[in-house]
Length: 207
Image 1 (tube, rainbow, N blue to C red):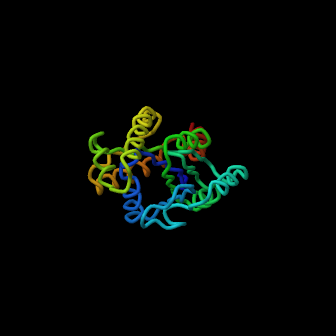
Image 2 (tube, rainbow, N blue to C red; image 1 turned 90 degrees about the horizontal axis):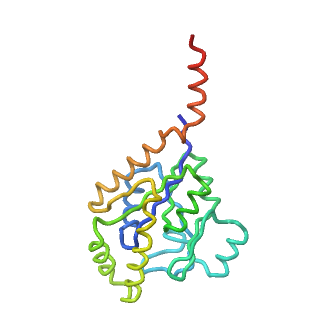
Image 3 (cartoon, rainbow, N blue to C red; image 1 turned 180 degrees about the horizontal axis):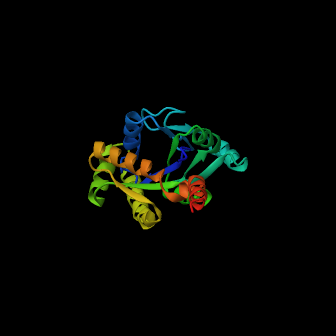
């Protein structure tokens, strides 16, 4: 069986706890590489360039687009977000599963370019809990919160495009569930065509 890494795209509503979930997954399991996105948004308190994101100017980002240095990009709440191409390919070749934490628009771009990518959508157990988490941050204005809730309503229409949903209620259980989903994806027939072709040719030799 092939152990080449697979692309795992993780999306979810703003406030669903994607960042916390990713940190917990990376801490517990060592077979993942978390892709660092480039963005034009300003850092939040505690964020560092090159750790959570590569924080770049609009001009720098648009140069990356022109140079085809991104495998996907999108504009979300007036800021660009995109995934650098080189890092992802290097980690896949090393056998790592590369996790891309990106929003819906970018995720669907990835699925078109990489049909064997695994798309996971993270959601809280309810819309009420989503609003509670957004307000609990205490870092955004009422206008921004309203914008994120409106965006969530739009994003909800695309969940059917994903391979799996992950309900982020109890963090430890959610981490293990996500790990199991990703590992199971390695054994689907479409991701093991080389092995299946060999197996079929060997079976054909039986009389």
